[in-house]
Image 1 (cartoon, rainbow, N blue to C red):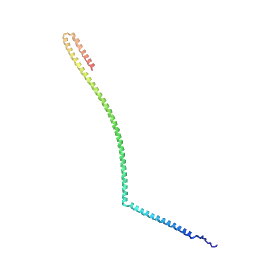
Image 2: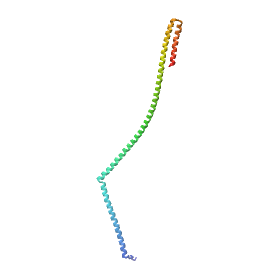
Image 3: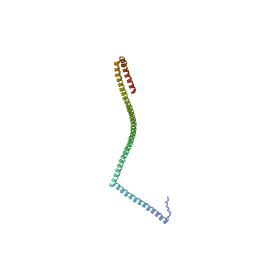
Image 4: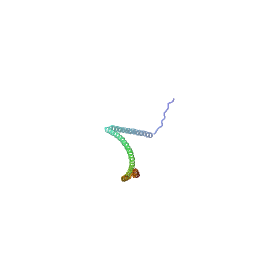
Length: 191
């Protein structure tokens, strides 16, 4: 085989320099970007170290503890507030029940007052009737006493007349019990 000759086209020097300068520019830009990225990464690393160091500092730890303690206290206070609100609702429910009971008792009291007033009126009416009946009884007693005196007077006259006639004696002794029955009948009618 025959040796092969490589054939390169001839490139003008201006084109070669332009191409080489473009390559250098690209290389410089790429290197600049890499350096800039390294600088940014180092800066971020330094800032991260500074933040971690600061976050782990005693003041920050105390602040974190204070925040946690405040959260715990806030949670406890919220629980107490919830319990207090539940107690308040329960108290309101009891108050409503008590108010209903008071209204019921007041209605019962009003009914009892009305019943008591009716009973007092009834007692007054009965007392008036008793007074009237007592007066009638006194009048009847006085009438009985008057009739008894009259009976005694009649009995005395009869006794006087008894001595005068024996036939009148039978009539007068039969009239005395009839007169007594008549008097008792009159007194019974008056009552």
